[in-house]
Amino acid sequence: MTEDGFLPPEEFPHDSEALVRWLTTLVRNREYGTLAALRRTGAPTDAHIRAGWYGGDRQRRVFEQVAGLFALYHQGRAVPAYGFGSVGAAAARIGDGTGRGPRNPGAQRLMERVVASRRVPWRHLQHTVVRLRAGGQPPPSWAQLTEDLVRWNDRTARVAYRWSVDFHAPPGRGRDRRPPEPTAKDGAA
Image 1 (spheres, rainbow, N blue to C red):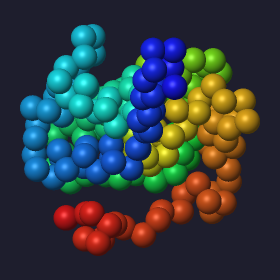
Image 2: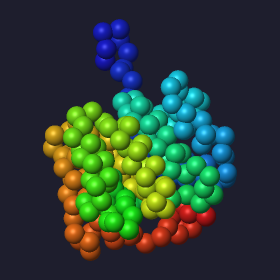
Image 3: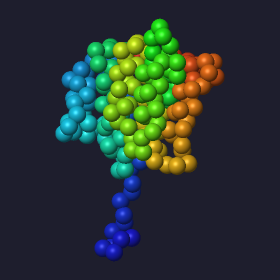
Image 4: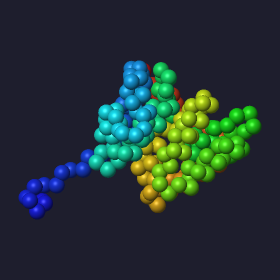
């Protein structure tokens, strides 16, 4: 009990899977206005606030920002992309005929900026999502991205290190293996 005799409120936990379910429903239902609102920066929109509720009491900002990245990737798309792998694995798919991932100087520089950040590198993550979208490459797993960013400053999680390892992993060593496509049972339509 608190000093005033009331029980402290229970902390509302975050739920990254529920966020992804909501976001993919927006794409499937072609709710382009809500997705456009999520892409807006500056003052939070009603859509940002709704996305933030999935973040619980402590992770509201992370969930709002991830929803914005999701909406940026899905601009003009009618089919949701759940993504797979970490941001490092996704960045390894960035590139062109001169090379992808570590063999592409632009992807290499981008990944160096992402993993060097002490704070969540929102601007560089946005650039990563834009590069993936422009290159027709799948995004990272949105749920995993959310969980990774929740733990960005947790030294035991070593998120930036794991992303770097995934980026530099040789082909066939896990980073480029896709999970099975979602089925109707998994929530895909």
